[in-house]
Image 1 (cartoon, helix red, strand yellow):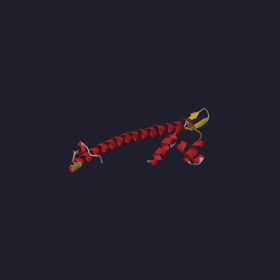
Image 2 (cartoon, rainbow, N blue to C red):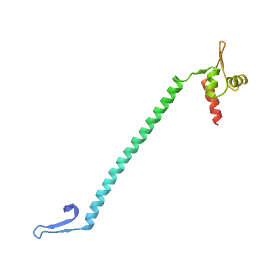
Image 3 (cartoon, rainbow, N blue to C red):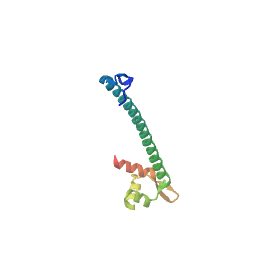
Length: 128
């Protein structure tokens, strides 16, 4: 360590002796350590903010992916056979559920269809 006024050293150029005030040295080192701690805390806060932003972006991507899957990869109206497959039931059971009103359905001409929202509501009711 180099001796200087900030470290509390007194140099006598003629005597070539150096006296160091230990308390001053310790205070200076503590101040330097506190400054580094403050810098590290600021860096960590920045990382936490970036982490939170990354989590928000991941959530947004998941929501878009779910919405896309629900909108593009899934029919809005199911045939009895499709509804049976989605519910893991037999077609005859789905026909009975439609007939009893347990599953709502719509009639389009001669065709009977079960809306996706009805299937979702039924499944949500099972989980409750």
